[in-house]
Length: 283
Ligand code: ATP
Image (cartoon, rainbow, N blue to C red; front, side):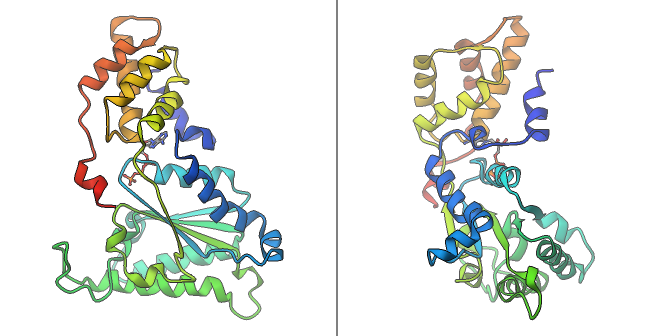
């Protein structure tokens, strides 16, 4: 039952409160994705155009995917997702059809949200020859995937003659490597807004501890939590979630009634940082 936190997180509706900190990011994402889908008429009355797509970028384990899951829970819109596994698991030539199928379904079900996970892995870069990051080979399949994706994103906008349902689709993409994206993808009318989902600062790390500790019997004071958060610069949300789970296991091992600062410190002692300084500076 100590794995409950994990299982519950998977099958219950996620809310903004499940993400600790990053209030400005929540606000930006709400304005960029929820408003265009749910308040389209109001926006256009004010002369505001809806963005076509949103790119979430930032280091791994800092809640990009979780943001999309919260959006999906919130939306009065259909939710579709496309990941590299969906595309490259298929046979040669099926990749493009898979993409077109996903966009087609999203258009039919509009208003809808289409999530493209690990988009850098999905598409590669057109005309990437001798690239700077070592992997300079240009892969014909990935180039075709990129072309298909660009066409489909442009197609959302136009909607096509008589295709009244062609409009209200928002694309959200996530990547750890924004620099590896083909510039054509982030042009106006495609992924034309970008939000940086950064690693949490000390105050936000406390908020993330709170998210997980409030789901378990815990006796940890604010001062203890503050001290702990200060001692783990570079910890991601995923690291902190993991520390709380480890602390719960320590609690169980010792037969204690509630998770305490001692359990958290035991977990922290075994923490191996997932982010390096270079990874954070990279953005
Ligand atoms: P990747 O780039 O590796 O896919 P990501 O940025 O999409 O990572 P998630 O998969 O959303 O990260 O997060 C990993 C785990 O860490 C999730 O279980 C998530 O709930 C947790 N997590 C990350 N950031 C936070 C946060 N700010 N508050 C609460 N939980 C968080």
